[in-house]
Length: 181
Image (tube, rainbow, N blue to C red; front, top):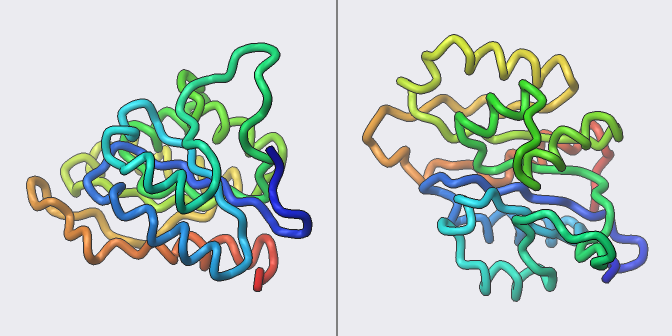
């Protein structure tokens, strides 16, 4: 499988957060800006999205597990990566260089490949208060990752899914890759 010739390819990494079911919003926004899109979900993130709907929208299988040797690559190489929503766990593991899932492996490798990456964390303020979280965000920024300015939501609030700005991922990526239209 390969992306459409001449179209940049965006990987959207989706984590297990309540707003993940809205990932189609980001996919549509990216497609309207000329991107081809593939989704990589964390293993737990799979349970938060409608996999069949995402696959129908993108035309690609949702990835979550490593492929076996000899298997074809179901997604073209990424021109950019958007991590949305990103959980506390994913942010901290990624910053620490832990690649124990396909999603984290892709994120850790993207740095070494120089692939522009944006992250939209979705964490509550109690989790965000942990010192490891701010240290992890600082490390990701130091790696060139574009980090959302969205504030953490109150604990046990559900986070206000309607306030999650999916399109911010594309806005954060635009300076690093140029406008895609």
